[in-house]
Amino acid sequence: MVVDADAPTLRALLARGGLGLRLEGDAAPDALDQWVRWVHSTDLADPTPFLSEGLVLLTTGTQFGDDTAPATYREYVSRLSGRGVVGLGFGTEVVRVGIPHALIEACRDEGMPLFEVPYRTPFIAVARANAEAIAAQAYARRSWALAAQRAIALAALRPDGLGATLAELARQLDAWVGMFDAAGELVRQHPTPGLDEETAAELGAEVDAVLRRGARAGSSLHIGPTPFTLQTLGRGGHLRGVIAIAAEELDQEGRSVVTAVIAMAGLALEQQQGLSRARGALRAGLVQALLGGDPGLARRIAREMWGPLPTAPVVVAMTDGAAARIDGLAEMLELRADERRGALFFGRGDDGFVIVTAAGDRGVIDEAAERFGARIGVSDPTGYDAFAAAADQARVARDRGAGPVTDFAEIGRAGVLSALSSQARALAEAELAPLSAHDAAQGTQLRTTLAAWFDADCSHEAAAQALGVHRHTVRTRLALAERLLGLDLASFAVRAELWAALQAVGD
Image 1 (spheres, rainbow, N blue to C red):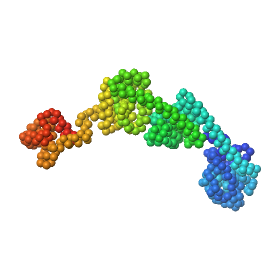
Image 2 (spheres, helix red, strand yellow):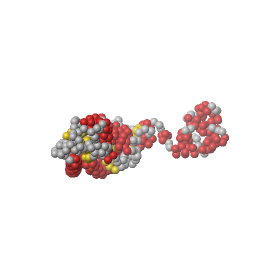
Image 3 (cartoon, rainbow, N blue to C red):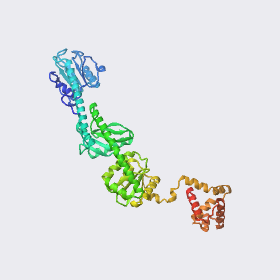
Image 4 (spheres, rainbow, N blue to C red):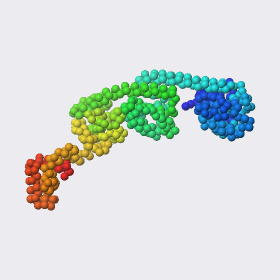
């Protein structure tokens, strides 16, 4: 904080007209610029149990005699410094003529500012002067806070109320102020250009961590030499963003001004949220139009609202409905759609976001998966006339994929039977149960023989060779399997059913 001439500091106290205070020797500038919380007088040899930090202590030196050893002075000053006393005033011509040399030496060695209080200046006058400075400073800060809040309220009435409010806050605090949206994007900053690239990246990572936690909070941190204060916007679990201020910890008046801005920004974002919900509902309607085979309607409305739909061929991607920070994901997609007008479309589907981009343009899809922990399936390239089929492909890829982003082409190579569920396995075991029971009771190999026969493309000769038995043995076993199952293996449908059952159970 910048120290002004009227602030209650030791420097200002020494400069106060009419007191006649005189600094003994030199003192470090930062020592003189420390705030003086109070002025107290005592001649106790050890007053530290009765003192608090930030005091200036006045003494007449009664506690010291003519024969006081220099070590006693050093111990006295050391105790005061350790207690947080910021200055020592010595009243001359009351008990002692001038300031004892040993006290001067002790204060110089300890870095304690020492000043003379002349006989004509009562200690109460020094204390009153500091109290008046404290009161004047408090009044000035309260007046500043009221004026700042009034200026911020007027800024909120401008067309871009939110941006004007943040700009006014930056002006009042004489500091950089930035606002991050729910997706962690720096959407506004004042003044511009703002932070250097490295600081901005580190601050963005910290903001992203705050948003991931999802709890309302205020925090302070340093990035290099720059201090930052972060304040979340919105309620816990539904954060709308973060305001970052490049400033040290604020005093009570500064915090009150920031609190007013947080309230206004939160209200503005909540109002924008209603508009966002309306836009989201319209996007969802256009997704349904595309799924229903009416791309013409979707094109006309999208062109009026957001620009043309991405040019075919496109890929259709689908996120999981439980993606973490779903509000942030929507914010990010809205921002990217605005940046890439005509190259990206999205909307809510029945069980997640549907994202449409040109084939080969996967940047937004990968970003959504990485930043928000979303599981996303991506269709094969397609035209809008096959949009519904592409959406089904994306859903299958999402549900069956092992990684954050899965292409349907990867799933398709595994074949149809790879989609069989645990329920299919249970049904297959039930269908093959007569063979399993007979094999267990009689020591036969009916299931093994049936599987080998299918592997040999239903050739008795090839199956017999694979099993190391005679082909008539294979025929006999298959005939027994038919009787136990009550099925005719000459039927293609029966063969397909049994082959699928064996594949489901892994035989």
